[in-house]
Length: 312
Image 1 (cartoon, helix red, strand yellow):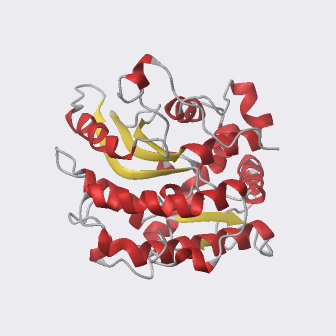
Image 2 (cartoon, helix red, strand yellow):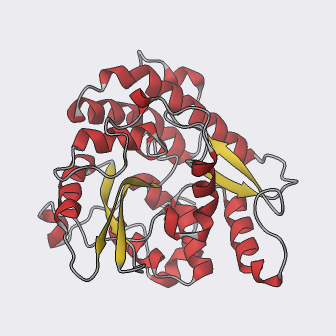
């Protein structure tokens, strides 16, 4: 039962000052749960039109990060399903960077955090999450965006999982991703599965399969799993992807996710031409969020008529 549909306001001095919280957790590439998505990203996509990706053609941008590039990168990929209604409570990888742990230069990280301020409002929270673990003297950092109400609702729905970690709907988003990054492996996979909006059945399958992988069984695509793909504006596969058993029959949750994401994507593509700069992009995405949020938060069906470009 949902106790409240309103997210808790962050009243800490840090939030009142309008400044970002400490770095959060690891991104897709750090999690075995997300190796599937990474594999599909490299496996090739049906389309990758240059006019649907950032103008630099890269996810690591020059110092002085452009807010419009960040917003466009998020909306052209799976971040759309966070920004426009909260179908995914969290999306990560909008911006990617790494720095030396021996001689850190955090200039670009600071630039990214400043640029992400455009995605901090009553609907969304955006920040940079920094990996807990360093590799070969490098520590990676990825930008993420969270839909506040969707996050709160998800934590309420999975209270049994989150409560032992001291996490409630009022916990700051950056604290949540930081805690998840430091959880034991199985809990970390489950925490990120919930954060990234995968169906509960898919989360259960991946965690159980991952924890039992040490028994010598063959695991991976074509062996113990296949993948369900949710298309985005820039890429038809490899971005919003989750694993299911080979014999999996689409569930009600799978069908709802596919249907709702299709409607949201169509609405975005209808409005995308209006997004000429960071301000207009945020305005259009907030309009889309106002249309879809009531359905996704209450888990009601999203109808095709909701995608009409004439909708307010």
